[in-house]
Every structure is written in structure tokens, then in C-alpha cells.
Image (cartoon, rainbow, N blue to C red; front, side, top):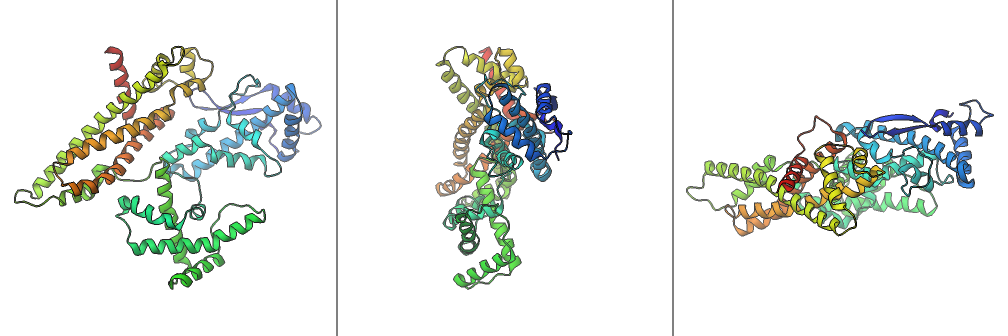
Length: 472
């Protein structure tokens, strides 16, 4: 049965990012008028939504707007529950809360006006909804999990919202060798050719059984989520492996190997999409990865263990210093490039950009407050002007190039040419992860002001640069 108040009460976030409930009297009156013959909670949601949807799509003027508003209020409750569900399932392990997710999906301001070209997320859900395909609740939860910016945030937290079985389903066996040799070699010490061939044979047999059955179901018009293979499917996969390789796996062992392979592929997908995977910092891996570089230096009477330890300490000190310097240099280059671009636009967009950047990153004002300060009507105007995600990405790429070049130049003191070639790609993986961790922390700090997180180095260096820019 329906909880009628969900159709006239909107879940939204205020300028400070806090959840609050906004009652919309016009929607309440409209709901009472349409369903006046009912007691408040005696009609199923599906019937209420069907009638409201009909009014929304086949009426005009205020009737259509109020029917839409009732449906948008209902969607806000579903989206909130979707965020809470993600927090319960993944929040603790990936360091996020539902409050971190709300800004991506609860952007409805409760207005009835159609004057704005901006469409909130729930409006997009409603416009794309087909009642012949699913319920409104199911559709909303599915669209929430597909929301691009929310998924980008979750990736930065190390979460990729696709099941193990779907990942295995759309990975080609021929990709495994490249993934294991180009990505996992830096994370797990690499895989032998035999291990790669075993993984390929397991994946090929998985496709021959599980994937083939799903394709056959889709041809019949049957669609469903990729769920874990049942016992019969696992037995068929094991028999297919034995048929092609002669190797026989117990069902439990095969299931474990499939899940381990999916986990390895998940890490790779998170990484290539710009997300955060658990990689040790340069300091943590120094004893193994950088030490291997030291080991390749020809031994001499003076190149003893004590000197190696001194070299490692010196190298790490150099790296930490370069990390800060390269960040400052990248910030200056990217910011000035953005300013030059905006100066070619009409109006004072370059000046507004610099002001908004300072208010956002240094004064920690919310987007709505910045919009009011600059005399703009909507907070999304500031989001569009700043494009903070793009700014961080550009700084990340610029910093990676500068940092790697400076560290490789320093490493020439210790290593020969071949050792440097081996180190080049290795350093890129390590540096990119450290830079992304810094950017992830900065974005979370900017959005939630979490005091328990470590210092926002990105914002600190950016504010120093903006202050120096004004005084010079």
C-alpha cells in the first residue's frame, strides 16, 4: 500500500549538503483532489503512479505539472533509499556515506516552473520510464546505479557496480594476457605463462556455457541480471575445461577461481576508468620495487648495504619534494590555460572563474552561496563554470608527466639504461595511483568537509597559487 505523503513531500539537500524534507502544498492539494474518493493509504503505489503518469503525459498546463511534481516527490524517496542501500552494502569498505551520494541524484528543487532548460535527475528518470518494461521504483534504482557522475565518484572510492559474472561475461579471453602482463605485473609481481593460459581456458569455457546460455535467452526476449552460475552450469564449465585441456576442477575450486579472476578484472576496470585501486605508495613499495632498481646497479666495493639505504632515503626525500613542486607547476599550467580560454569568451568569465575557484577551494563555500555572491541564478551555473572534475583530471595528467620525468632524471644517478626502461612504466602506475588518491581526498573534502580525512593537499597548493597570483 502507498504512503501517500511521499507524493507531496520532497527529499532534497540544502545548500550545506544536508538532507531535509520539503512539503509542497500544491502537490498535496492536487493529490487529494485526484484521489479524493480514497482513504490516504488504501491504493497500491502502482495504481497511483499509473494514474499520475497518465495525467502527466496526456494532460496540459498545471495538471501535467502537478502530476509530474507528485511523481518527482515519490522518486526522491526512492533515490534516497537507493543511496542508503549503497552505503549499507559498500560504504564502510569504500569510505563513503549516503550523504556523499545525495548531491548526484537529489538535485530537485521542488519547483513547478518549466522555464529552466535544466532537468533534474528524477525528471530524466521519469521521461525515460516505460511502464510496460518495469515498475517506476525498479527503473529509478537502475538509473541511479547508472548515473555517470555518481559512478565516477564510486570508482574513485574503488567501487565498480557490476557483478563478477557480468565482468566475466563481457571480457574476451585474448584480453587476459595483456591485462595480466601490463597491469597486474605491477601489483602482484606478474603471472606465469601457465597461469595466464589457465585463466584463459577457464574464461573460454565460462563463455561456452554461461555466456552462450544468456545469449540464447536474450534471443527469446528474456533479460535478467548476471547472477552466479548454478551447480549444473559449473559442472558443465568444468567438463568443457577438461574437454579442451584435460584438467579437471572440483566445483568449489572452479567457483573460487572464477571469482578470483573476476576480482582481478574488476581492479583493472576500476584503474582504466580512473578509479582507485589498492596500490601501495612509493614509500611502501620502496623496499621491493625501487630496491630492485638498486639491485641492478653494478656492485662495487663502496656500493654496500649502508650506502644503498642512504640512497633510498635520499631518493624518497627527493620524491616527496618533487611531488609538491610538480603539483604546484601543474596547477599553475592548467589554471592559466583555463583562464586564457575563458578570457576569449564574452563577459568576465575568467575573473568569475578565479573568484569562484577561491570561494570553493579556499573559503569552502557551497555552490549555491557562490552563485549568490556572483549574482548568478542557479548553483549549476557555478558547477558548469568551475568544472572541478575536469580541472582535477587535467592537473592529474599534467602532474604525472612532470613528476615522472623529474624522477626518471634523478634515477639516472643510480641505474643503467635498461634498468630505467624497466622502471618507467612501473613508476607511472605508482605515481598515477598516488596522484589519484590525493585527488580523491580533495574531491571528498570539497563535497562533504569531512574533518577525519587527511589534509587536502590539492586545495592547499591551489590556494597558495591563487594568493600568489593576486599579489604578483
